[in-house]
Length: 89
Image 1: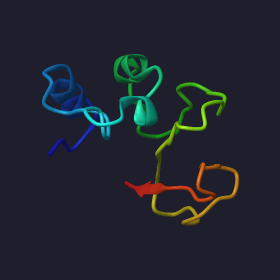
Image 2 (image 1 turned 180 degrees about the vertical axis):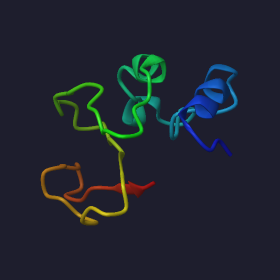
Image 3 (image 1 turned 90 degrees about the vertical axis):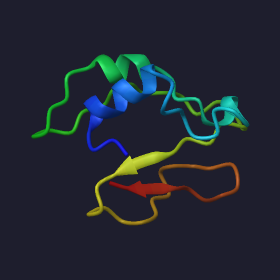
């Protein structure tokens, strides 16, 4: 299990880590600009936005990763089944 972004990057590019459901439904869970995110230097003091993506595909199910200090549900993050997902880090 990777403990940080650097370890995850190594596993991903070796094919030992994959996007969620990459082998079953890649289009629903593909992460746009993932290679750009992996190559961006990590700033542990400040949160940053890697890219802003228009929610234009009904079948896309973005996964939101956050700190555990934010509310568990936020109506600003739509999901096709009228719910959203927050993964606590």
